[in-house]
Image 1 (tube, rainbow, N blue to C red):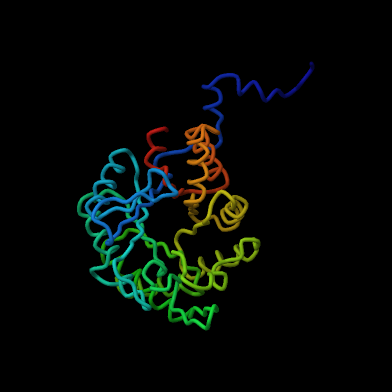
Image 2 (cartoon, rainbow, N blue to C red):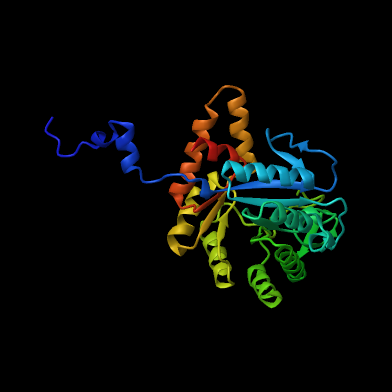
Length: 299
């Protein structure tokens, strides 16, 4: 055949494929989510997520230390308090579970980047992401009152030593309020649902408007969550705004692959690396994944 171009020539050996590969994964791309709980005395497995645990503060430090030695550069910290109330007071308490955990991590693993989830749902007695009022099965979440509490939580995380605070609540104006508060300072609901404040997954243009507002209010990094089902949004966000962009490989995505691998339906390592490459190819600079520790060993 008289062909001017034969793309297969550059695929003929591993060395050639590596030389022309457009997208590569690096250990510094990954952030490991960790869960610290005041309600337990020893690690408790998360039933739907093999290999993932709720940890005590001491176990958290040990897990983070081990991950850092393995090559993980950053963790994303979620806290589970022993007490909850309608003002999420433990979310911004100086002695709260997250604040104590951050101080312990920065003391024991000073080279580790500590990111904290800033949301109120885990600290609210009703499980919503803000101050809520109930009318039968209907729930009204107060935006501005919730933003005030989110800003207090973010400031308390930063004061404890967090390197990055990552709000995940979707209240209007919370990025600007948190940014102003920081500058000045130098899961499941019991009733109703979160559709009145979380985004409609069908709306791509609305997602871009939300990102634009966050950037205007002072966001340094933006995140797309969940990840795999929203690669189109990830691509559009990175392409339009060019800001450092994170993707969250959420628990449901993790559980699906784990379940399929346990049944012998797919190769876990190959599937995970392909998924991570897809995130990065779509525009992710940072990937939050429960496989972070394993991945840095695979690379």
